[in-house]
Length: 344
Image (cartoon, rainbow, N blue to C red; front, side, top):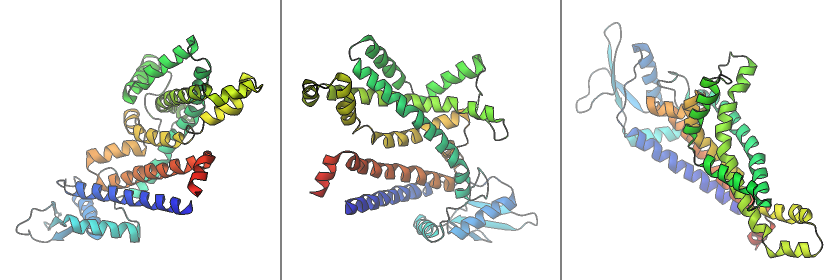
């Protein structure tokens, strides 16, 4: 078992390394956008890029190559900055991360501030919203799925199934637009955008309602549909009929046997659902003005702030791959048959 765990973890890390390497190389092949700040800010940024091994400078123009930028100081001094070859930048990038954990500084979002510092300041906000969404969606989705399965082919089941089909078909940006229009503009009950740090606590609490609702509804529908399908299969199984013939009541058979067996494939899916929410929060954070890593990812692409983009990409990639490893391992801890098969 330990060999399998170590193998999966190493494979996940290798996959993350390949994804980030391809991302770095492909982005570095794009045309370089000039820094739009003042001369001292531009010079400070390019000095940092020189230190990282991405750019080199010349006092005079170099024949046969176009400069990335030309910085002219107040005294008339000109410095020409040129981009290093992509392969050389790639090896410098690996060295900076492995030996110094240095991902570079921001270019446009927060000029000359370390990318890890910017990400660290916004990561907590995204994690709070996503964790609250999971806490809300898991019990509600499972409860609705159980209710629909126990009331199969009744009016309750039809209403729940129809609502699930409608809500799960709504894209996140459509849902948040509708909620903003209904609860913020037509009826001003909630803030129209993510509260600022200086806003009162009550305003901050209200600010969670719209993003948590948007992230939770899709997950609730997914859990409900999954739980209903699994529980309906278990309720129609032969061993549950045998349990009833031995004298167990319907409530005892459902609680002791049906729910326990139906939950085996459901609990591991919570990890995968959490990652799905993390990916989907990019659009919601951007629309609602949330200062999280999702909206930061979009801003980094739009402003070509590649150092921020690399760190953000590393977070999403690593969390996604490690969650996949935990998802596979959780089956072995939940289902004894899988553990027995692994030992053999």
